[in-house]
Image 1 (tube, rainbow, N blue to C red):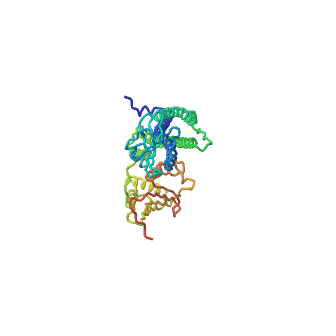
Image 2 (image 1 turned 60 degrees about the vertical axis):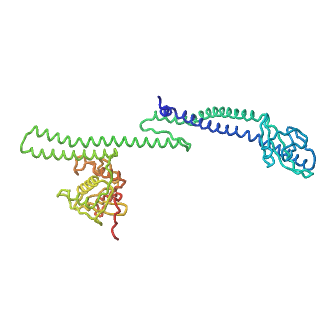
Image 3 (image 1 turned 180 degrees about the horizontal axis):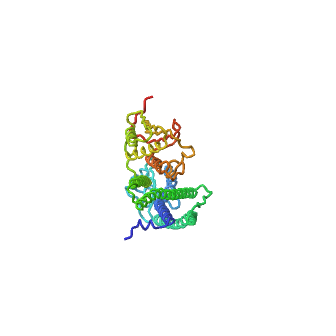
Amino acid sequence: MRDPRGWWARRSLRSRITTLATVVTLGCLLVLALLGGRTLGPLWTESADAELAAALSTAAADVRQGRVPAEPDGVRVHVLDTAGSPVDGKPASGLSATAVRTLKAGVAVRTGGDPPMRWHGTVVTAPDGAQRLVAVGAGLVGFAAAVEGGSRWLLLVALLVAVVAAGVIWLAVGSALRPVGRMRRSVRRLGESERLAVPQAADELRSLAAEFNLLLDRQQESRDRLMRFTGDAAHELRSPVASIRVQSEVAVANPDPDTSQEVLADVLAEAERLSTLLDGLLVLARSDAGRIPPATPVELVSEAKAAVARLPEEVPAVRVNAAANEVWALAAHAEIELILDNLLRNACRYARAQVVVSVIASRSTARLVVDDDGPGVAPEHRERVFDRFYRVADDRARASGGSGLGLALVAELVRRRGGRVMVGESPDGGARFQVIWRAGRDNEPPAP
């Protein structure tokens, strides 16, 4: 058995809109037709009541003055005593005792028969002091046929209007969707750097075209970035691999025991460099895929001291300044370690004499500041220094020892946690790198 939802989903947008609008229109018209059919009877009765009320008023006035009331065309007039017996010399009215009591109360009644009769009545006092019931009635000729026929016609008109509405809606939706079809065909013909023409009218199609162009811009930017990243990664990986291969070939071609230790040391250094580069690429790939560990509160002061302790002995002097004993950031422990290691290695690589690590707390944020007294980062490079494989100087020989991924890792990991990373000038004239996270706990700011 076919799934009706799947069948419905395969219909065109034009068909679905037309069908839904037609069904809603038909439903509303049918409800109106049914209500209209039900109101035909009350409308007919109200019309008869208005005529009978006028005839009753005239007849009651005649009885009060002792005159015999006249009968208008189509209206029967009876003068009865309070028991319902005729006193005007006419045949019996045919009103039941219940109908007589209802009329004496001033309430209109309808009796059966062919045709059914509608009666109005009122009690008046004759000139001799006797109480008389004046009853006027009119036959509801064609009442049932009119109600039934009127209802049938209303239903037929509702169906015809629904069919006409379906055609109009089909044409209107087709006209409204025609620009979308043109836009779809334009998309198929777009070149790599081409964009959709944005309509002049400030409507939904203009917004759709603008948003689609933005999507194409982001896709182009992502594709360009991926191509640059792939090319740079291939270049970066080629260098240590080529170095390891050359050293190995030299060792095989010249098996000299005196130089074997030196060759092994060089191979080990290149292998470590290659491993570091691959680890950085793996972290970036996981971050791009959104696979990041859950955030937890991490204490920055102890992490900064531990990162300083991991530095080799030959680096410049590094000290940690903290205004509070504990400063908590919302991140992951491994991320904090990686960020600190990269920032400290970068600072020690360029520092002349010292590096200062400051940990600053506020109630809503935790800040890490790394200052060095090296050459600093020129203002024209500060916007791109966090790009992957970007270097202030195109030093492919690795004179500085960097791979161009450390600061990109820092920026990516901080951004994924909703933080910020900035570069500026330190008080000693070198570079200042600032990282700001959301507070992992309610940090106590330093006393003024």
